[in-house]
Every structure is written in C-alpha cells, then in structure tokens.
Image (cartoon, helix red, strand yellow):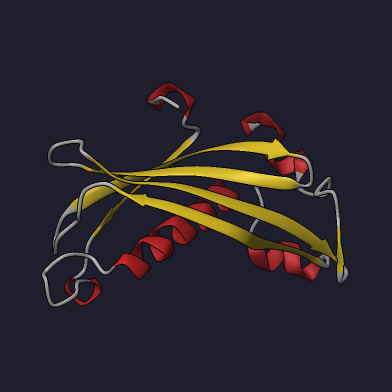
Amino acid sequence: MNENNYCFELEMKVRDYECDMQGIVNNANYQHYLEHTRHEFLQQAGTGFTDLREKGIEPVVSRIEIDYKNSLRSQDRFTCKLFLRKEGVKFVFYQDIYRNSDNKLCIKGRVETVCINNGRLSRGDELVPYLEKYL
C-alpha cells in the first residue's frame, strides 16, 4: 500500500537503551514502537485501552508479521505510519516505519487483532463506531 492510504502517523526517536551491541535497534523494540502507535491511534479515534477495558472489551493481538528492511540506530528520528482494515472478526493494522533523515522504509508490519468482550471472542462490532471513519 502507498502513503496515501495511511490514516495515522506518529514520530518518535530511538533511545540508546533500545539498541543492541551492534548499535542498531533490537528487533523486539520495533514491536514496542508499533504498539505505542496503535495506542496513540486509538486515543485519537476517541477511545483507549483503559476505557475499553472498563466496558469489558479487550482488543488483543493475535498475530504479528514484521519484515525488517533497514536498521534504525541510536538517536534516529522515525515515523510509524498505519492504516487499518476490517477482515472478518479481525482488525488488521498495516504499520510501516520510516527513518526521517532519508525516508527509508525500516520495517513493514502487519498486526492482526481481535476483540474479547466479557471473556468471549466477538466480531469486534464494539470498536466499529470508533474506527469506521478509518476503515
């Protein structure tokens, strides 16, 4: 998908402790970047995990795929961009991270989430009012 499909962007900066001995961001930290972006996106959409949890709704990750393209290094500024699709019972977040200095694609991510409503898998209809303008 191209940049025109992104519905949310969040700029961040690599912190020293996120890098491994090779001086590049440890692969696990990319998942933190993706998760933080999804949390901020939900806030912009008018809800958040605390609000949802109080209503008995738990959006949970069921699958993550990450393709690593170019490494980020300490102090790099980067932008995590996302767009969203509803695929059956899943909300699928397509998330890409670009290094700001040269606009190089660093990772391509696909995060599948499902909703648990009061302990049971749901169709996710509870989230549609918040997300429909992004779908």
